[in-house]
Length: 497
Image (tube, rainbow, N blue to C red; front, side, top):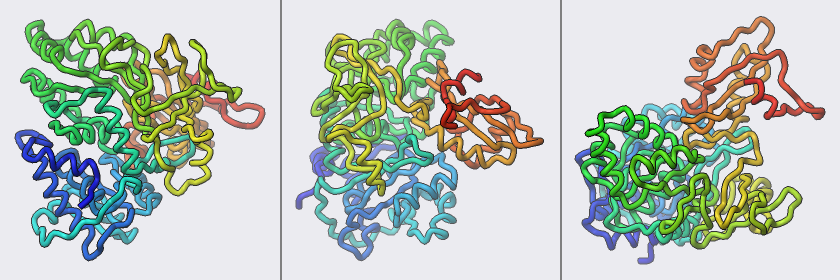
C-alpha cells in the first residue's frame, strides 16, 4: 500500500531507537505500532478522516510523535496545541480550526474536558486507547498533496492565523534540511523546544525521525539533566534558541574550571550546533566559540516557509548573518518601491518561493492572497545581502515581538489588556533585551480613578495570557502618541520607556 514518505522511511529503520525519554526508549517499529492503534481509534467506523482537523494536547515524548503520525495516517490535519495555553487561547485554536476531536494525554484531560463538552468535540485519551486497543482498521491512502498540519502564528491582526502545510510542503522542508545539515541515522539530538512551533516539530523531530536518528525528548530545558547527558556524549547535534545559549554561557561561567572543562570538551565534539527562532547576538556567537570551539550555525525561517536561509554546514558561519538560501528555496529582496533588489548592501523585504512554502492561512483567503506577490511569499522581514550572506535588519511590521524564540502579536496582547478594568487604552511594543531578544512592554492610559502596578497587571494576566505573552514592563501615560490619522505610533511608544 502506498503511504506517506515519513512512514515509509520509518519502516526502513525498524528496531533502531526513535524516541528516548528519561530511561525509556522506543523503536521505530513501536512508534509505527502505536500510531496504527491511535489512527484506528481516530477513524472509529470511518475509512478516512478526509482532512478533518484533529487537535492534540500531548507533552513531549513517545506519545506526542505517535499521535502526530496517527492523525496523518488516518487522513487528518494535525493541530498541535500549546501545553501552556490558557482556556480562551485553546478555545480560539479549536474553534478557528473547526477541530472535530481533541487527542489528549491523561494528565491534560481535565484541562480540555470542559471545552470539549461545551464545544461538542470528541475527546480521545491516549492512554485509554493504548490500554484497550482492539482490531486495527484499514488505514487510508494519504497523498502528499493533502493538508497535513495547522500551526498557529501571531501576525499583525489581533488574532493568530492558522498556517496550513501539506504533506508535500513538510517533506520538502525536511529534505532541504537533511541535505543542508547532513543529517545521519547515527545522530542523536535533544528536543526541549515547544512542540506547537515549527522549530521543534520540523527541524528536530521530523528531520530526526525521517533519517533514522534518535530524538531524546524533554518537557522543557532541564539544564542539569541535559548538561549531564552532554558530558556522557549522548548527542551529536544540538539545536536551541539564543536565550538558551546565553543561559548556558552564564551557567558555565559560574562553574569551577574542572567542571566547566568537561562540559566544554563534550560540546566541542558535537557534529553540529544550531541557533534559531530569534536573532543571535554576535557577542553570544563569539563567546560560545571562545568557550567551546563551536561556531553556531544560525538560520532563518518562519512557520509559513519552514527554513529559508542558513549559514553553511561547511564554510564560513558568519556572526550576525543568516547565510544563504537552502536547497530548493528561492529568495529575493523587494524594495519599498516594489523593485527587486539585486545588488550587494541593498535592503528589501525577504520574499520566498519553493515547495516548502505553506498552502494557505486557514479560512482566510483574502489574507492568503495579500501575503503573496506573484507566487512569492512576503515574509514582512527586511534583510540586506552582504558578500553573498543575508543579514536580517528588522521587520516591516512593528506589531510583531520576537521574545525567547516566540513570535508574539502585540495587537493580541493589547486586546487582552484592554479587558482590564483599569485600562482604557493600551499599546504593546517589544523592547530590546540581551536575554530574550525582546521583552513585552505595555504603555497604558488608565480609566478615571484607575490604578495599576506591573505586579498587579502580571497577576491579572495569569489566566488570560500565556506566560511568555505577559508584559514585563509597564508605563502609565496620560495619552498615547498618535499620528495625524489617529493611529498609535509604535516607535514613539518605545521612547516612553
